[in-house]
Every structure is written in C-alpha cells, then in structure tokens.
Amino acid sequence: MNGKLGLISCIVCIFLWFAQVSYAQEKPQASTIEVVGKARVMTMPNVVTVTFAVETNSTRAQQAVRGNAKQTETVLSALKAIGGDNIKIRTSGFSLTPVYDKEDRFQPRGYRVTNTVIVETKEINQVGTFIDEAAKAGVSRIGSLTFSSDAEEKLRKEAAVQAVNQAKDIAADLARAGGLTIKKIVKLSYTPRGPAPLLRMEATAAAARTPIEVGEIPLEETVHVIFEAN
Image (cartoon, rainbow, N blue to C red):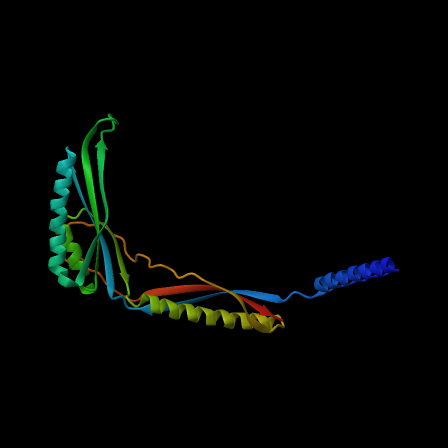
C-alpha cells in the first residue's frame, strides 16, 4: 500500500514539474527597446596643454645628453619667463638612441637625445607667444596643442544626463509607434570620453606672432539604454 502511495506521489510531482516548465515556456517574454542617446555641451576652454620636444645629436652619447640638457633648460627658461607661476611643466619622455649609417648597421655614427616636456597653463591668450619663444629658444618639435576646461568633469556629467533624457524621449516615441508603453530601464551603459587634441602642428622659426584663435569646444557624451516595454 505504501509502495502505491509513493508511486502516486512521484507521478503527481512529475506532473507538477512539467506543468511549471510548460507555464514558464508559454509565459511571454517582455519586449525591450534599445536606444543610443547623445548630447553635446559647448564650453569655452580655460586650460591649454602644449607638448614640446628638444632633440640634439652628437658623435658621443655623453655630449648628446649634455647638449640636450642645456638646450632644454634654455627652452624651459623662455617658457617660464612668459608663464611665471601660472605654468606647469613636466617631463613626458626622455630617450637616447644610436644613429646608424645606411651602409653600416652595426657601428653607430652618433647619438640622438630627445627630451619631451608637457606645458600646461591657463594663460590661453599667450599660446602664440609660448610657441614663438619656444621656437626661438631651440625647440625641435611641437607635438600637440590641446584646449580643455577645468570644469570638464562636471560638464560631461551634464551631457550624460541630457543623453539619458534624449534616450527616454526616443524610446517613448518608438514605443508609441509600436503600440507599446515604456515601463522601466533595465540596463544603462555609459563610458566617459577623454579629451581629444584640437590642433596638431610642427614648430617653425616664425618671424611674426603665431595666431591662435580659441573658440568653444564640444563635450559629447553617449549612453546606451535598454528599456522594458509592454
């Protein structure tokens, strides 16, 4: 008797399990709408960053290093004379490399030293003067010129919030067109963008002041949002 009851209980459990699986399979999946929201905030920059490279060559490595140190100090002194306490200077790279002739790849004919420094200042109106004086002092290359704002983090957050609101509006329009209603956000992805150089140029011996026109810079942010709709 107990055996029959146990068999009946087992059959009932199997039946209930199949019923649950069937219900889960038949249960309709929630509809989703995936939207990309974009927004842009314009701002006037108040910080400029310039990369200067001083390059020297000599037949001996020690002479190349000494010559580069002297030339770099001349360039930095010229820049500090313009910016004063409102300038930040840091070294971003230093290299000593042998220079070979095309005919002889084993014996170097000399050595090249490159010292790269990054200058950051809020004296934006002096950018042209920085470039001209650095060229006169013997800088070899100007790698990049970048304008930015010290309020960039705050402005990017504002742009991101605007991007989310735009995504909501787009999703609502799409849902209405499809006969649906937005219920909630099920996933939101956001990765802040980094600053991009606005101008790249090579240094030349300028007879006149280098003209640099500063305008508003765009800060753009993008969000990816998935909405549940029914």
